[in-house]
Image 1 (spheres, helix red, strand yellow):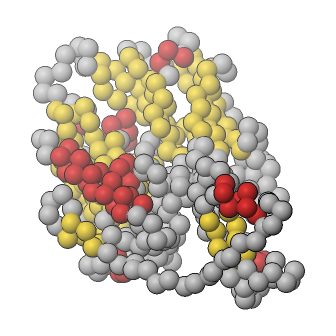
Image 2 (cartoon, one colour):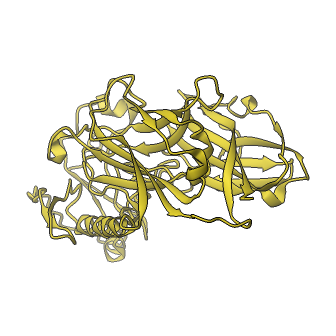
Amino acid sequence: MEQSKAIGVIVYAQPGQPVQDMNCQDDECDLPPPSIPATYIPYNEDLINMLQSSDPSVNVTFQHTASSNFYMAIDSQGLLAQMGWLLYPTFQFFVWQAEWFNFKTSLQANMTDKALMLPVVNASIMQGETGIIRTVKMPKLTEMQKYKKVELDAYLSCPGTTDGTCPPWDHIMSLYVCCDNTSVLCGMELGRWITPFRRRIGHWLTNITPLIPLLTSDTCTFTMKLDAWWAEPWKPSLNIRFSEYNRNPDASDMYPYKIVPLFQGGTFNKSYNAQYKPIDFTVPTQVSKVEIVAIITGHGSDENGCGEFCPTSHHFVVNGKHENMQNFSTAGTLLGCAMGKPITGVEPNEHGTWLYGRNGWCNGRQVDPWVIDITMQLDNQSNNVTYFGWYQGTDPDPKEEPGYIVMYSYLVYYKNFS
């Protein structure tokens, strides 16, 4: 536009679409910034009609208007709280903070229920390749199985007392468990979160009840770490929360008693699905329910934004005919992690692009396991399951550096109390 002698640029959004960042892409970012002003405005039909008229004369004035970007709020407990970073001068950021306060109030109300709390990590610095490693004495497995709900109660804070002391970038934060060094279950992932952009208010409950059979010993070693060893430090806390204790279970009550690892993720390229072969399994006797549990997120970026910003679908097929599919359709949308999401635990007003939809995750929130009841899809005892992941309804085929899928998946068997 500047080369065509334009003295200013106005870009308008399509009808029903929000305004978006006017950012450079790829090699454009190496060029000097334009010397003419530019702005992005909402769709305005009157303005469009005026520009398309026989006399398209419009007076436009560009100006720099300073706007405040540091606010404090009082939550429902009467406590003073930072509001984070208001990326644009819009009141919507206040709404998102209020939604998160409602989430926090609801979470605290749920935490008042009677529960057994098992401390794992207590406000410890997490950094480097090893992260945080804790060996914990566990309740007896037969007692854990009497709890109808088991959750990861995670807090994520920073070394200091303000958002400014938090790391600026988002990363995968995972919890791995090993209760028997000789078992194939050693080192499996028990929970996953995505860190925010420079905010320290994270608190989440993640239901991991189907994964109880990973906790197979009187002592278990838990490792909590980031996917990037070089990242700046966070300060997490973690408890395992056992609630809804069933003191006297009857024969109709079920519990997860056995778990089998299935598929893990990999590089999301043309050969991604070629690595997955059907897994045969025989259902043990006296099993009353069978589930597939999967934790799936996409990361990295090729020319299509895969895997962070592209919508992918993930399919578990049982016995060649029962297809179970999850579609991350909001990936890449402008407000996919903002509209209606703080009420689900997303930390609002982060110091980065937290608003954009991601591939199976949002910044500053837990990744909930996908739980599929496949009991009615089984053929007596001998069965098989396979998996594949698609982009736009087919195998991915990037021409540039591919992204990747992080996945842990399990087969979980339940049986009744005798």
